[in-house]
Length: 362
Image (cartoon, rainbow, N blue to C red; front, side, top):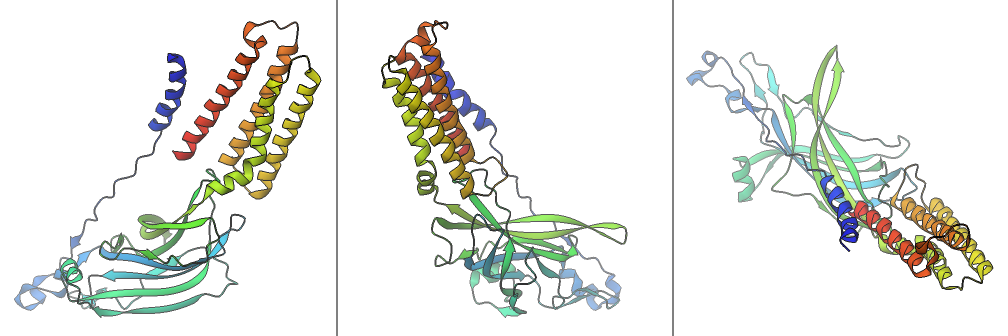
């Protein structure tokens, strides 16, 4: 009994030790611009209040998602992105050169899309007055700078189907700075969280779960120098209702496995019936695998593939156990006992399906 419990807990310990830890989000360090105080009366300059890099607080409002299908590489996203900056006027140094001007374009969407598709954009940029006390306190100003962008276009999506049909997809929309990280950094807007519309054109079976934000960095080689640029990444999480898909895909495979177990109930003297029924179970299992492969175009090993492979393995194992039991040259008390053989098959299936379940939920 203790060895059976050990077989159950070993995979749990192994997979729990492989759990990825989320990286810690470090605060953005800002520095104050230094100028020559003698050029300004009272020893101060407009740039004394400017901290670099300037932090851009970003959020997105997803209005609709269309054309998201497993066998397609793109989808249409309708959304509004908004970014707040704690500045409202250009900052000029002592030589009257512009340090930072919010009226200049310093942000751009970064995505892969089909150029033949229509790109619709309503762009607004300008100082906005807020009357919300939390916003005033957070930015320490009654007027801040807002950049708002309404868009509707197709975006490329690289499907991660390793956990199919229980997979969660992350649809990404990126906003990239055209100035390096010494001047611009992106941050998630804590006061105004990203939102999404429940009424959307997602296919039945898909559900919009939430929106995450993270900052990534990219390197560009400009005139022989490598500059690092900040990129804000919105991840729209889409879950798939895998229960009904699971029944649809593997109902035939389950029947094949049950048939292969029912063979043990047939008397040993009727060996021909055992073999005929076992061969039928093998063909049913293989046929179900081709059905699953036709449903998803994937070049990687998915949970559905692993599940089908386990079913085929179990059906073939049951056939092998029946043949060994029939063979007179192979004499073993365990193999020759029908009850023991059936238990070996069932325990093997439980262990394999248990490992697959742990992999799926990990």
